[in-house]
Structures are given as structure tokens and as C-alpha cells.
Image (cartoon, rainbow, N blue to C red):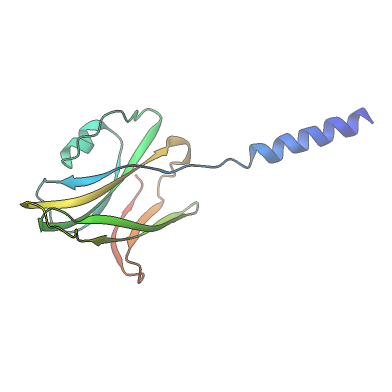
Length: 147
């Protein structure tokens, strides 16, 4: 009887260990004023890489997480913001469905791109995984591969 309880307890522990929930957290949204052409999705592993995109975010501990940045635009006027419809992932691919929406009141005339930053735990980092951004119609507009 004791062996049955130990076996059941061990099996339950094994099942629960395999059921971890990975949370992808939207860390920030905003505007970047670094000149660039076209939309871009990129993986960030350091504060310096983030600053080169013109995004000033502090408080990300890159020893434990990495960031994925979706940049859209460019636009001549501030005020566009990104709408993330869905994020779906498996072992080999991440698919982000997104689009931009203009503001009701246009902002300052200044070239910019809108961005969304996600922070993801390093334990789910899979080199070679494809990260793709598509429109709600399914048309791809930016992609990268995790190095």
C-alpha cells in the first residue's frame, strides 16, 4: 500500500512539473525616433542593444530574461499605436498578429516608429526558432530567427 502511495505521489509530482505556464509580459509600448525604414522584429539581449533602437528602458535584468521588440512604421507624425491581436507559439515558431492604429488627435510632426516590448524568461529561449509578425489578414511584414 505504501508503494502505491509513493508511486501515485511521484507520478503527480512529475505531471505537475511538466505543466508550467510561461508568461510573456508586455513590458512597454511607445515611440522610437531613431531613423529606420520599414517594420522590424528583433531579439534584445542587452541594454545597449535596446538603446541603439532608440528605446530607453531600465529595469530589465538580461541575465534572466530576453526582450522581443516589434517596431512598426515609420510615420511622419506621432500618435500611432500598436494593437496586438494575438501571440501564438510552439517549439519552433512564434507568430505575432498585429496592426497599427492612428491616434484620434495626431501628435507632433516628427519621424518615428511605434514599438512594443515583450519580456520573456530565458528558460524558453530556443535558438533557431522563427519569430514572425503578420497582419490580421495573415500577410507577414517582419520576421527574425532567434540566434
